[in-house]
Image (tube, rainbow, N blue to C red):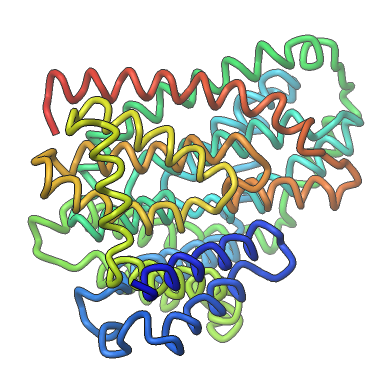
Length: 435
């Protein structure tokens, strides 16, 4: 019995350390994972098992995606995209706002949202500085769009990768079941922001001299342009080829981790001229964070705590799948507001397995609900996702601060509206198409 209490206390301690931001989230999970091992909550031999608590398949795919995105960044891909989006917007503030948000959502569907926000945030900050307007509306719309867009595919967001590998879903499964909902929610989100900031966007005028400053900032030097573009097109081709393999991984019988790492190797061969620097710039802390939290959740599974949580959800719902979907959606979204969405997903995976086995509800509908709860629900607060933290941090570096109140007064209402729409769609989806 004491092991159950111990595993819960370790989880609570870890989450409190993450929320407090007194230590980095990776350090917090390392402390938690160490306590799980030292206190004997989870046997050490469990770690190395293929079907053990650590989702090696997910970590392999995330590692490969990180390398490919890093090489694309080095090749100038993001700046190239920014220039073309800005030209398509014809330097009109309202169009810039709409196209930049849409671009953040689209890119996040195939790339890590943190990388997307690092680039989009920095570019938005520079452009709004030149145009002498506040970056806050732009960055907030980009954060929420990236989180929603990232939920539309298997590789768009780490929670999706973890759920996809845990339940052996394919890339196509995500595109069919989640992408249409994410696209609808993305446009609802953008519509809300456009209405909320309508006066600000329509009243802001810029002149041709300022246009030229922005263009000059994004336009690469002629000599560097040719080589960079050649490398970029090669790496982009490899990246697209990798996505195609992921789409047909089930039919080909290939591991998604193998595909991700294989794509990363090809990117480094053809486009990674500075291999040691590329390896150094991989976000190792995030990969370690995932691995350590898997161990903490493994302790919860081993001691039966997850079974109790699943039983509680089952009791509240009375075994009714529609109530079950609603409880998971809103509970997951609430937790994602205050804790990074990866821990939430890691905790819910064994819950989904337990509910599916006990109440004979398809894992699919419960998994899609969890993905959408975390990806959409995390938008409500400044710490609801890694992209939120990065976007706010970039904005603050530019001299514009955003308090919790300033962020939540805009983000919370649109998040609740989006979740209501998602809830209705998921219930209808279950009613007409099942799990």
